[in-house]
Image (cartoon, rainbow, N blue to C red; front, side):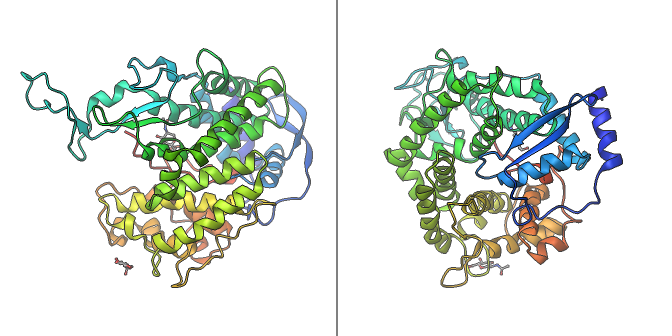
Length: 441
Ligand SMILES: *[C@@H]1O[C@H](CO)[C@@H](O)[C@H](O)[C@H]1NC(C)=O
Ligand SMILES: *[C@@H]1O[C@H](CO)[C@@H](O)[C@H](O)[C@H]1NC(C)=O
């Protein structure tokens, strides 16, 4: 372990508060600024002024008070887990869509592109034939050609790294994390030679059949709000690592992306799609709108989700479209990531939509959908009454934490039974529900 990490771990374990996770959303302080001494490389302290960040899924007031707690030695374990991930990302990237080796049908290298994984050329079982069209579906069997489109994996790395690096900087004030986050962001979104076009017109391509599909929007919507929260943290101050011009360019990119999401045929089709796709689309639009200062639009998209909840959650809390899948526990928790992120966005002052308290005509609700997964989250696959070929109990970790913070007793009662993700829990320092059991590969 590196010296700085070791020191941080020591500081954390000696001074860490008793193991009570704060009620993040209710109990956060109203103060808009904090002057605090942050640990820098585990040794000398620097006095840093933090202002409340304009985060949308993460609660800005909570992030401010959590930084103060960390400066006083709290949350050592969570901080160590964040820094371990951030130190890994320090050695990776930056990434750009222009590095892929294949041409994008109907587009350019600057367009984000990915290929539908289970579709194969017509001659897949006949090497003597040169006929590749039409592509045929072989469900569950992944075509290795898909990997020629490196944007999906690289985009995941871009999102994970900017989030962890920005959190690491926020809590330690260590410039190197901010510097690397800035480099990753400029390469993907800003620099003329390497920036991505602000749309997803070429995601989930099926060769011979199309040059992209609307459902490919999920490549971004399942995680992209982490990036805008990361930038909200960086935007609390400007320097060479991330300056005002960077922030303005990034904002401009997101305005264009949001317009494409709300107005393009693909954006509209994804929003109207049943199951988790529609929920993630709405969540992404609401988050971007609020982040860009348009809370009224954010409110409207969240209000409209009430009808979606009525249709996708049943009275007993199950999600009929998700429980019929072969990986039904994964998809039930996956959809909850979108729902709970929407709950968090709705709590933002100015957005003010109470989706947690909403109940449909038959009693359908987000808390009911959470309760439905709690037995399996606490005790495992035998408590899950639906098909699941790859049960990962830790997929529910953040969901239970969120529900406990919201005051749900059944969730609080099982906090000591839930399974941590591989990288260890970071919830108290990053209380935004993540998809922890990604099925990307
Ligand atoms: C990003 O982080 C998630 C959550 O820890 C993980 O499941 C996923 O595999 C990561 N993706 C990449 C590309 O690192
Ligand atoms: C909940 O209701 C759905 C039908 O709406 C059903 O498929 C499912 O099995 C029920 N779950 C339990 C645990 O009874």
